[in-house]
Amino acid sequence: MSHQPWRRELLLGGLAWAVCGSLGAMPRELAPPTLSARHAFVGNLADTLLSVSADVAVPIASVSKLITALVVLDAELPMDERIAITEADAARSLHTRSSLAVGSVWRREELLEWLLVASDNRAAAALARSFPGDWPEFQYSMRMLITHMQLFSFDFGDSSGLSGFNRANARDLGVLLVQLSQNPWFQRLARKPAVGAKMNVNRYAHDHSVALLAGKTGFTSAAGYCLAQAEAFGDQVFALVVLHARDRESRAQDMNALRRYAKLKLGLAS
Image (cartoon, rainbow, N blue to C red; front, side, top):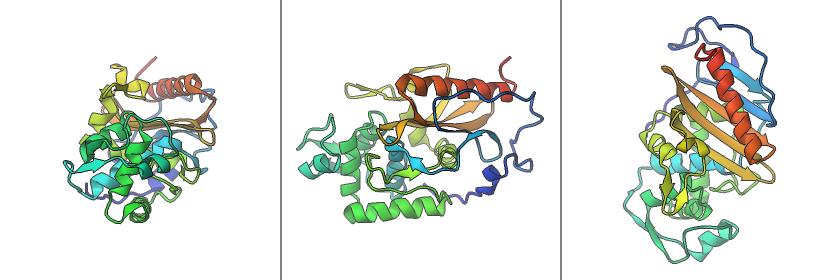
């Protein structure tokens, strides 16, 4: 995947009318939705529709796995290489529940599916360990990638998001999701209903009324309930980000509220 330069000013400036695909006149002023989430963002590279404490870097839990996958894809490592799950992978993922037994062997492509569809922490650990140079080089590559993309709020303590050092702000996550929405890998896995016997952890992957292009859920006690995704609204792509929602249902209610708000602002709903 080739890097593209991004100008954060497009988002920080609110409305960038010179960018192709920016909004016309807004239909009307709308009251922002009431959310349980402490941080939220709706926007793309041209327009910011909603920003709620969107420039504060906070823990993002398994939403981090989007960058883990992007680093692997960007390195163009062989997708058919077989990788064994080790005790070290189980330890690095803090022995959290996993469908990948120690000693089982998977192709790198399969590990990416377990990573993004089932949010498997051992898959994240194995992908980082099998990267040339192991975790230190993988972490360096994560940081270089987000620096190249000018997403300066990001940092990483592991490849899964279990670490509280995995942080970003909602606005930068929005920039990331808009880019990932153009990548066929993320498009396919966002909508993949299951891997093995595990259902896709993002409920919107199963909702055919949602034009989902990329996305990832996350939860830790430090991060709360998180969800960042990109959707097509008419002929435009917008990112919707919810960070530190109160619980799983509140996260879904918040995302539904953001989707309704976006449609109203875009004149796609009455």
